[in-house]
Image 1 (cartoon, rainbow, N blue to C red):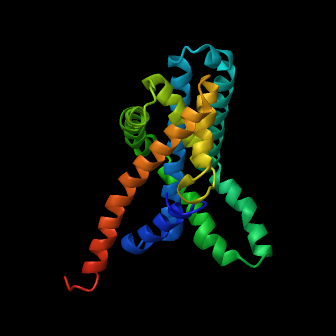
Image 2: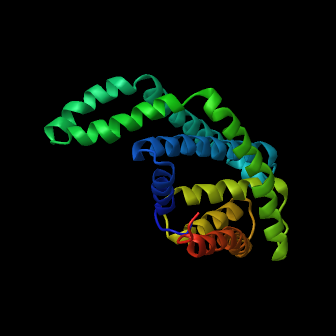
Length: 237
């Protein structure tokens, strides 16, 4: 969250590789499964927001929500099907390309390993429980946190409206952005308020409050864990 682009994801991959002594390709395949679950969750939250909200401004553009949700679900479905059932044909097609570039060892060690491991990981038992837990957390902890953060700065935000704001904020953070989503997150929340027919100033105020809330919520335990690591890293176990 604190690093630019998707640096946080890459840092998590490296840390997992070092601590769990897992190959980078295997950890990246787990990250891919995580992103599939995240995309499905974001699309589900957007769909629920369009169903629950009865604002005239939202109803006017309900077809946009439907088209976007269907597009996301279709894109995820196609990507999963290709990797799950057509991974080997794709690898056979890519192998001559990497061989021509003199990267056969890299292909076998990283690309092929990544595709095959992701194919094995993309199963219903693997994804069902994390997917349900992720959606439940977004619909409870995250949505209610948005409502409370808005009230903290004097803005009334209903639960249904918080789902749309959560959906827009998640879309803004999906893009490679500045450290901690500065700017992109705020713009996405402001656009959600405009979409709801509300003041952009309210949206910016709520976005700043939400950003500060989660920054503190992430930063305090992260600083404590880092401090503990610094104090104990040279202490013999």
